[in-house]
Image 1 (cartoon, rainbow, N blue to C red):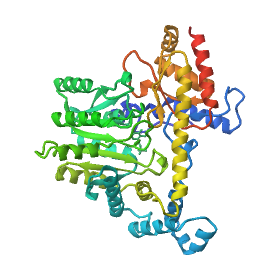
Image 2: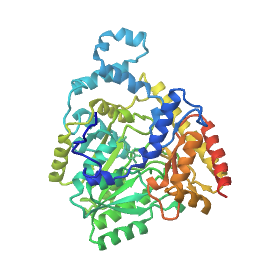
Image 3: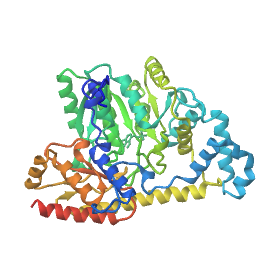
Image 4: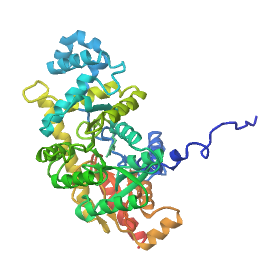
Length: 487
Ligand SMILES: Cc1ncc(COP(=O)(O)O)c(C=O)c1O
């Protein structure tokens, strides 16, 4: 029997802004890599030159080697199944739960009621207070729990903020290039204007204030209402970590241009070189140094997440943003906006609490927590350096020393012959290279094009989360063969 297609929707009549949005991190290559994975799982490997897929395309720590931190999961297990708390003796004596695990679970349960219940729209008040206490310890300046909003990952926070900031298609948001495509994709969906500013590869992907000023001025000259600037620190895909003086410059620029600062600080604990300095700390310091109130009405939204760092609990979807200097009426609209989706997952909120308030020295769970945390940190650093050293040896590949986050973003110089082959295949050269890499090795990276890159340059982004070194060897071998083929 032939069926008649009476569906109301097709790809050309849906919201065109959704269609236009690009999100390469989970694009064609990622889909293909999942097809390979399914084939391997079925044992259907006869025509594949590799036996495993390495998802180096996405910062998804626990999909690869990273193990969850025991303290976090033990507390969560009790939150999900509070009946276990009726058997403390079993927990303590047979399952190696420590008294502080039980104490924290009881405390979180007393504050949430049940993790199966909706919480306040901006998050459980006691969790917001715990975050405020953490921010005060981190920055040395007080934080107010009323300015903190729990979110389903930093992505949901970015979505909220961009929805509220973007009034129409003339609203412009300065976005670093290369960047994590959440920003460009969300701006496409909102039909607002992305105002790109290029990071400086020659300075290991630092910010280039002159380039930012020029992008902003050019956009304003085109009639764009530039309202906010996004800074990802430490960077994705670059790993670059900003110094305090870079941050001061950015704040000064935002003040002069009356821009909202959106500081995406989800990689704040993934720092190998130097130390993380928060925008909030620098802003508060500037406010203290300038009692004339020059910096007092600057609006800063900073975001954090349980997805990255040594926590790596991205599947649990937890994060928060803190607002500084926003008008109460705007904040009320932000509150309303988050209310529309009720609240962030409560179990994710609890994980945020555990992240910002982990076991302290002297507490029963501290030794294991420290051991696991340091083990993950050192493992990431070692893998970052192993991969970087491999890139150093590869012809036509240049890569800055790893600084932080979970990624390396090498430049690749490909021959004219490779570029012609890519064009014949209807692809950009970096996409062509990354696709051939996947087909030959099972290693899935993201072409630089997915993050934006200066015209005439080519890159790819790879995480350094995957265990072992075999896959690094397979990249080296592939690269040699690719370079020889297109010489
Ligand atoms: C810079 C940056 N911001 C935000 C996110 C999203 O994080 P979340 O899982 O908290 O939504 C990511 C994820 O990779 C990221 O790299």
